[in-house]
Length: 289
Image (cartoon, rainbow, N blue to C red; front, side, top):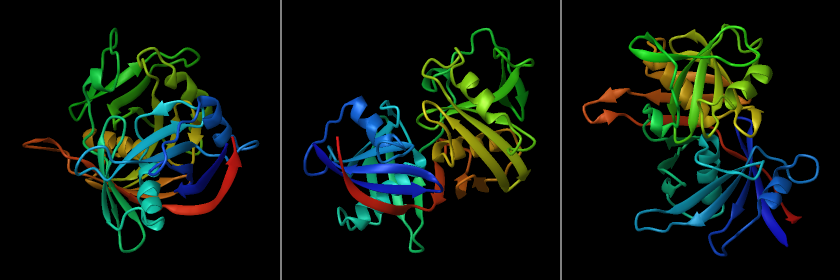
């Protein structure tokens, strides 16, 4: 079968976007892997499928697959590309679009300057919702927020991580310099740590000052990517809860700059995280699957 695709990127995190708004699209994991393969397919960190909304007030459905073929819950950079895609393709004239993912409802806003702001929803810290199994671990508290000492095979000392969910699980550790951080070696070890039953995205966070950070992310099933939207949100939220960052932060990923805002906890619970950044079309084409 021939499939039409659009290749997009947001801060270097790249995607294959497929339109299933008119005709349902069902691809096998093998076909997803072929699409994501950088030598034999199109090449992408994730494949995004645009579907019609299923409920009143919901503009679109949104499914996300890693280039391994596995469906995942969330992708912030992909969400920005999503709203750029539906606007450029004339699928919706709205500048504020509501989309349903596998486990969340997102509001995506196209800005006048061409950037996209995504309401990523509130972070979650309950172990069962991440999911995270802290059995046998004793955290240290910094500014009242837990840092968990993970004992990881191949790493001499316990690795202290802040743990939370942005619709998908994240472990954030502080490093002095992301350029020399052991992302390639530690990333997969922490990703597969038994405390994370669904594996985990691993963020290596360098704090420059209270409003500027650098970040590298080792994404589960995908390896290190040039940017990770949910990873950026998780890292800034962790930094704020640890008392190290202000409410508005400029984040430098390897592929570009993202802007993260989080107001923390209010009377009605935790505020949503807002992420602003670029989203661009790279090229379009057809591929035989």
